[in-house]
Length: 72
Image (tube, one colour):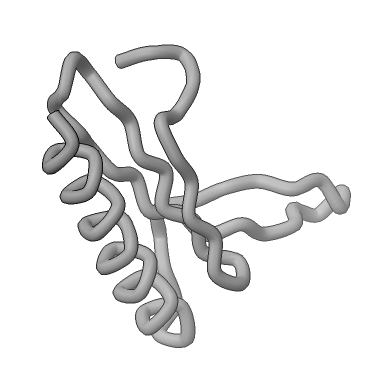
């Protein structure tokens, strides 16, 4: 995978990060939170309240990837 993501989709605290590895796409879905010191961190563990945004991020990621593949 490259060092930079191909695209990011953010809804609330949920982010889908899309990676392009020579035309093979992968997606990481994470949730942002603040730790005890107030620093922003990311986790792949989602709360029930994050699931709708995660599903929307996944849907939008699939659409974005499909558009990239159709322009080949």
